Image (cartoon, rainbow, N blue to C red; front, side, top):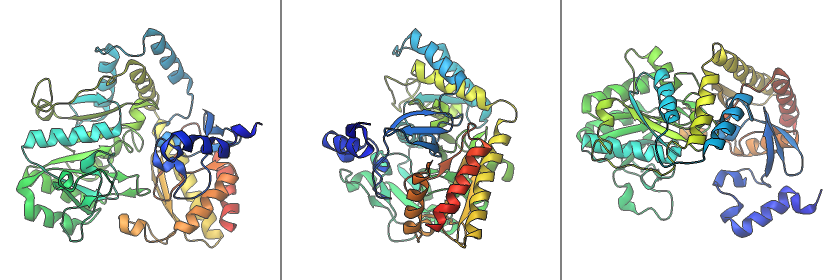
Length: 432
């Protein structure tokens, strides 16, 4: 192997021409230290890096690869679509088919607009909510990530219901003056915010199952009260299901809450990841009454040259058809639970505090005695132990997210043998 094809050499080369050597910050391994792995190829449940090292992949491109890499039906659909044309800048029948497939599984959505990224979908959903309500104020929650639009790059203020301040250079304070940041799963703060400014709130955006502070569920009392308050004050409830959508259940996370909360449904839904099957594709949708505010029907403008790209829609549609097959999610959830239960068992036997949670093909674990409920408790400790564990697992051919605050993903391609190998690696890694 040439020294120029090592991960270290590629990283050095990349840093000369790409800021930080990566095109998305978490890939740089800054949170865990060390050299990022440059991936050469992937197949099924595995990735292979530039040095030829194979890893069991629990990132899955941060969620989309629910079928594993290179699924035959998806490959066939993408290859066929590519021969027909990469991009037209005009509508196609496949766009309609993909939207119909999404709406069929998500009753809260009557109409949907396709875009190219989760960030684009989230920022468009907020613009739509503000246009539909005629209000400006947005509520989000600390630890929930909705993309890198300016108004969303905010951290919590110092009081119970105070406005946040920018967490990124280049975002003027006045841009986030209409963004309020509250604590996830804190009903008291939520009630105070609505009591103070309920008439000004355009929408509340929340991840029903947060995947960017590891794996943290919104509690049923919290989601119940959130729905009640939005309804009472005329605000729109926006569920960001970019990560959880079609990943935790066929009907997405909102279908799980609908079973627990009578009549529950969001006003606006945001999707990404799985609906694109690994291609750049996302969407936002709502009732016809809300979506009619969107151009060309209404005054809320949104557009995109690559929206509904014919190759991306082929990839997404083929993926959705596979995961809609009977028994798919039962089998996927069983695999994921076996992994998480196994990690807890191994840690307990090794005398290490570890607790995990999972839903469908999404999971998380914490080096803690109990499951955290918000960003503050997620960040309370365990960083050093996680970093050691991450590298020990990587050395043993298991690729976890390179930061303790990211969720993990299991695919249909993961076998019992893969999970057994992961748990054996974990046992050794916990002793390191």
